[in-house]
Image (cartoon, rainbow over all chains, first blue to last red; front, side, top):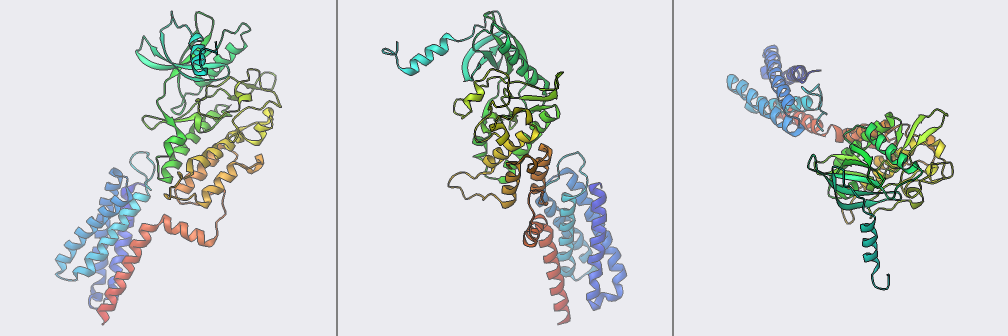
Length: 118
Length: 339
């Protein structure tokens, strides 16, 4: 599977799961559907960015760092729009980005036929 | 004469006296490089292309033509094996004095054992070994056995290229018209500091059962027993196993790494006494090394649950850490939210 498509799918899935954890916060439970949709979209964007990065750079540590950075930026923007829950949104969102970065480095077909990064 | 000259001087005079005459050719002799039982390797300057080359020359003219034919066959074997891991042959011919020679690329570099001594990373060493496997596997796919794989015969070039050298003991596995495998037993030109089986490298007659050829410590049991007719790819696999042992051995006084149990098992399988217990092909050996590098199970070693868990952790370490941090963080958020 193409690294960008892989990033998109993994990002969307992890984003949805991350959004779903909002269910454990009773205060935001009524808005859970919107949170899940927003978080899925955020993960999807992070996944595509990590996929594009993985096609250009073949390094797991750099992929994770890039994913963490993209996740951080996107989560920060979401938290900014929410006017709150900064830690609850930014920290897990960054880690989701890091995980997507790891996945796109380890798996998926590279643009050229080089060996996967270790 | 020995009353007036010491042994070194006598040897120098002997070498100078035996220097081949390259007049009338495009090559200008430069210096002695190495010596074998039948041929000597010199460096020379190719006057046409203005580059340094290595030339292997018969020690003396061969009136019967058998040695000539063998040297040319060795050159043809090398020419047949066009691969980045094998030194290319540029030319072959006969000198004015009747000696046959062939010209090959001059390789500057170091022996693989000396080269890996400076590499502290085990995966790097293994990736180097995989490149040797690629070359030997390629030769096998062309029906040629090397039969003398050892550190002295593997060079790491100036650009990091890995070259399998000295195909003087090569054996062509494809059956000849009489149904027997054709063999090339040409004296080789090992570097002076290497240990070789003199009985093998100095021989100039076709290999027959009972004749031992190879290098002690690296040749397979069947090779050591002189069972020439029963040799196949597994003979080279034995030597590759011994080479792997050398390549993964940490330098003396080094605590950089210990040879992992799985790698020891791979070496043991490659060097099994019994042919049937060894890897069936070089690609199977290489696959196990690649599996090991990828943190996957290998065919040579049955791991227990603890080892499997450890391997799983090492393979997915980054993801496991990220997930753990994520779960911890989420748990803390829920905990603080409720209290």
